[in-house]
Length: 88
Image (cartoon, rainbow, N blue to C red):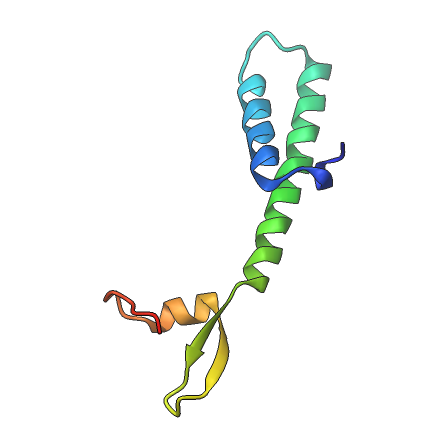
């Protein structure tokens, strides 16, 4: 199974395990380097998936004219006050 086949959560757990293993002082240099390389690949893959998902997340909001429009999730959050939101 390649890293691209892993679910995000499984890849994240695998990355956490690698980080824990890298903190062990008894690892030899070659093993440490391989684990570091694997962790780096996972980290980059996880970051890429987050960025891709962020682009896909859009929130449907109503404009002042009552028309529906798509707004990026980040844009809506930056425009909203901290008050509770209501959904229609």
